[in-house]
Amino acid sequence: MTLAVISHSDCLLHENFSGHPERPQRLSAINDQLISSGLDAVLRHVDAPLATREQLLRAHSEGYVDDVFARSPKQGSVELDPDTMMSPHSLQAALRAAGAGIKALDLVFAGEVQSAFCSVRPPGHHAGKDFAMGFCIFNNVAVAAAHALDHYQLERVAIVDFDVHHGNGTENIFSQEPRVLFCSSFQHPFYPHSGHQSTDNHMVSALLASGSGGDEFKAKIQASWLPALHEFKPQLVLISAGFDGHIEDDMAELNLTEADFSWITEQIKVIADTYAEGRMVSFLEGGYALSALGRSVVAHLKAMMG
Image (cartoon, rainbow, N blue to C red):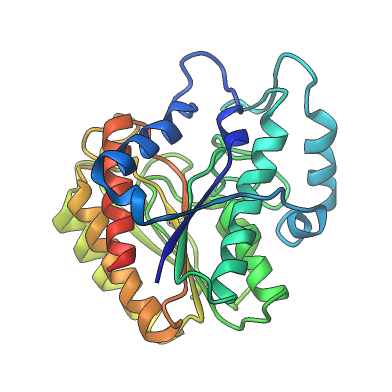
């Protein structure tokens, strides 16, 4: 069955300060690689809708959502945190990024597609219930997970996050929600300096030392994530797909390659196929070395399609 790519041109309009690594060219690099690989021809492209206030409030506090809307500038820029900017088009982009996951789930549960990739920005996994952080305004994967719990009445949703940074915002939102299993792999110690102290059995962390490569990555996933996922038996698998652990990406100090991203996606697909009728939705998080990002996304999508 077809894999959908959910995106929107509004996501290209979000601007950060000059030299900021989270830039519009990230989406262009992905599109270029999809075309050059030939994969683009077999994908279904869908425009992301705007997330509604109701959908945002399933994951974020009312005060936080109101604050983001109130601070959206008509010109210039504002800082939500030292790394997270809003320009005049950022709110629209963030609403599209959150809305992409809603659309993806609706397509998957309607049986129109088996799986989907949300090629969106700004990313989301550092945004918590009531705070912006680390380039993230709304937590896109959390909005989708909450939609799955509330609208589709699921009892078990897994979120797996292989970004090089811990998805602290996702953990913040679901720390008291046992219907969500959150598995995160990340370099440690490293920004945002969280995830290593969690005692909740539905928050599973795979800590990777600086310099770790594919062998260490696979060993940690096999020892921690996979047993937890098989025990949990998710009805839906959501992926925070960060590619900033790539050896060519200077955002961090891991030595992963496209083959490693393909491998982890294959493991996730086994879980989805075994317990969730293949239902799997992925969200772009990090990845800032443009060529490596594009190649890694191609490997990720090929593995999602099997």
